[in-house]
Image 1: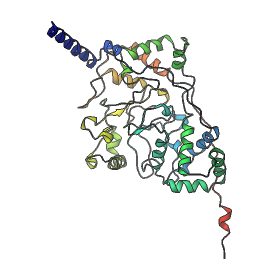
Image 2: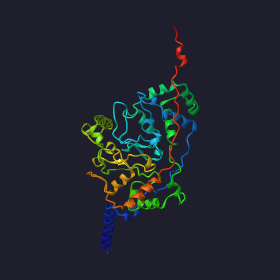
Image 3: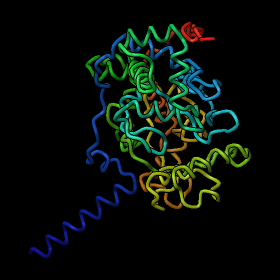
Image 4: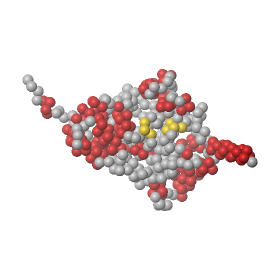
Length: 375
C-alpha cells in the first residue's frame, strides 16, 4: 500500500510540474508569489537634502567633461528615462542597453538590467552612475572640488549636511532626491485600498488575466511588480548594436571591466552572465517593474518593443527563441479582447506624472582667499 501511495504521490508531483511548465493557470494559482499591492510609504528625507539633490541631479558638472547630468538619461518628461531604445553614453562611446526609469527605483531589490547591484544601500547606484566610464565618467575628487568652487552649493551643503561638499554627501543628496521620485495617485493602488471604482471593468478583467491565464504574476509580483530575478525571454538582439561600432566598444569594454570570459568576441549582450559567469545565465535580464510602464517605452533591456500592445503580443506568442529561454514562456492564446484588457490593467499602474522644476544652476566663482598671493 505504501509503495502505491508513493507512486501516486510521485505521479501527482510530475503532473503538477508539467502543468507549471505548460503554463497552466491552475499551477499559477497554486504557487505563492509576493502579493500585489500599493507601494509602502517611505520616511521622507530631509527637505534641504532633497532640494540639494534636485540641483545636483540636473547639474552636468557632475560628469567628467561636463557633457552629461543624471537628467540626460532620466528625463522627467520621458518617465525619468531617455525615451531611446538604447541609452546615450559618455561622449566618445555609446551604450548597449535601455535606460531604466528611476521612478520607484528605491523600492527595487536589485538595480540594473543584469542585477549587478543590490539596492541596499541605495546610494551605491548613484555612485556607479557618476563614476562608471560609460555613464558619467567622473572622478569623485574632481567633482568634490568643482562643487566647492560654487559658493551657493557650499551654503546649501552647510544647510543640508552641516558640512562642506564631499563625494559622499553629493551622492547621498542625489539619493535623497530620488527617494521622492515615486508613483502617486495610482488607480491600482486606490483599488487595492478599497476604492472599487478606481479600476474600470476592463481593467479588473485585465487584473484577473494578469494573475491567471496570462501568468504575468509569475515574474511581475509584489508591490514593485518585479520579483527581482533574471530570465531569458528570447528577446532578439537590437540590430543597432551590431551596426554601430561604438556600441560594440561600449559593450565589450564594460564586459572587460566585469571580468566576462571571451569579452573580446561577444557580439550580443550576455546579461546576468556578467554577474554569475554561469553559462546557463547568458541572455538573462532582471524583471523590470511595470509601474509607470505607460511612460517608459520602448521596452525590454534593448528597447526592441515599442508599445505595451507589442509587449503583450510578444508574450502571447511565447516569447522569442534562445537555447536557454525560460520554460515559463509558452503561447498564451489570448483573445483580442483579453489583450485589450491586459493593456487597460497596465495603464492603471501609472499615476500622476512625476514632474519637478529644473533648477537654474549656480555658477562658479573665484574663491577670494586664493587671490591673496604673496609677492
